[in-house]
Amino acid sequence: MFHGFSRARLVGFWFAAAAVVIAAMVVLGLELTLSTSGLLLTLSLLPPAILLFVWRGAPPPTVGEVLYAVHGQPEGRS
Image 1 (cartoon, rainbow, N blue to C red):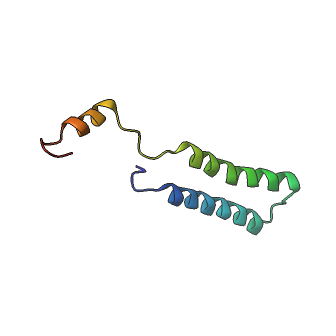
Image 2 (spheres, rainbow, N blue to C red):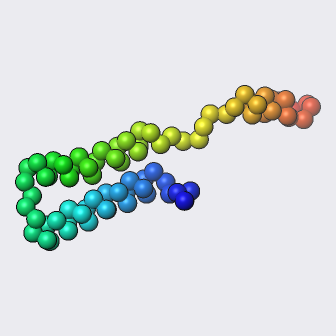
Image 3 (cartoon, rainbow, N blue to C red):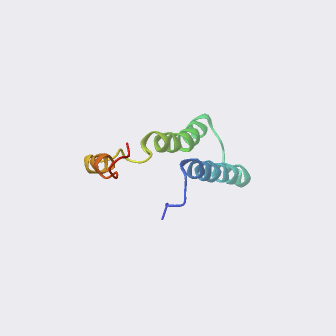
């Protein structure tokens, strides 16, 4: 499902969704107190930060892949 998404695109979608929620609160006239603002800020910044730390790149090569790369080359080539 998420094969076509990069980290940056997913974080951008998260920030856009958070902005829509905050804008909807302002339009609906809900009271924005200090505690509500802090909660919204935390909910909008914490998940992307966790995502950026947890989501890694390609896994390291396995022992089999390393051995094949060394021994799988034709003779006479280094």
